[in-house]
Image 1: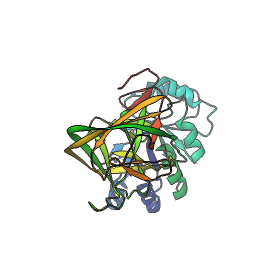
Image 2: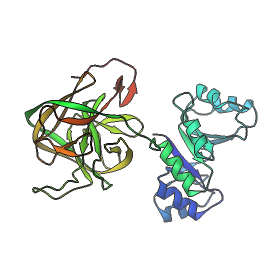
Image 3: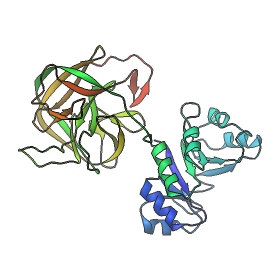
Image 4: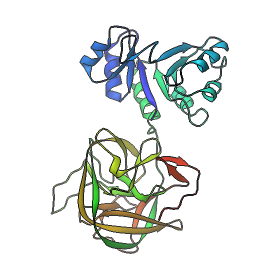
Length: 331
C-alpha cells in the first residue's frame, strides 16, 4: 500500500487533525512539534527529531537541475526520498523511477496524486501532500488507497451444487465498520473467482444481527483487500484492511477489528460463470449468506441449483497476493 504523508510546515493544528481523521500515514512537521502531534492522536511524524528523522531516515530533494537525478540515484535505496520540483520537465519522474524505488513525490492536488501513482504502471511509493485543505487531503487519501470512484465489476454466477463437508476451521471477520445491506467481502477458493459473502446484518430468529461481521469462509480462502490484492483469511488480524463491497460493486475500506477462527461444519458451493467453475467453502449455517444480483442476501441453507449469486472474475494468477500475468490452475 502506498504511503500518504501530509506536510505541516509551519505547524497547523487543524491540518494535523485533518491528517488524522482522513487516514493519512504520517505528517512532516517542524522540529519540536512531534510531541504536539502525539497529544492529538497516534500518528507517525517525520522531522529532524521525529519518528522518522529527516536527513537520517528520510531524505528530501528539491530538483533544480538534471544533476539532481544522479544525486537521487546514489542515495541509500533502503531509505525514502521525497522529491519535489516546480518543473517536471527538468527530470521526468519516469527517469527517476526507472533507476530506483522508495520514491515519494510531493503533490498539491488530486490530479497530481493520480498521475504520479500510475507512472511506469507501478507509480511512486507514496505522496507527500503539501495542501492544508481538508477536502483535498481526503480525496488524495481515497485516490491513493485505491477507492476513489472504484467500482468492482461483479457478475452473476449460477449455482450448480451445494455439498455438505466435514468439520473445519472457518473465519469470522469483525470489522470496525457497520456494513450496509448488500455489503460483504469477496471470498473464494481461487483468487480469480471470488463470491460476495454478505455481512451478518440480516434479521433472523436465531441470533442478533452483527452488522460489523462477515462469516467469510474457511481458513484457506482468499479475500479481496485494498490495492487490487488478495490475502488468505487465516492471515488477517486486527488492524488489517479489507474491501467491503456492495452488490453494485462499490468498494469501501474496512479495518479489521477482530478475527475469530473456530471449528464448524462446512459446505462447498459450486457455481458457473463465463464458462468457469467457481467454488468456495462456507460454514454450514442459516446465518451465512451469499448475495443475489439484485442485492438480496440468500442463506446457504436456501441455496438451490439454478440460483444466481454475485461473483468477481479476474484473469491471471496471484503471487503473494499480487496479480500476475501467469496461467495458474486452482481447483
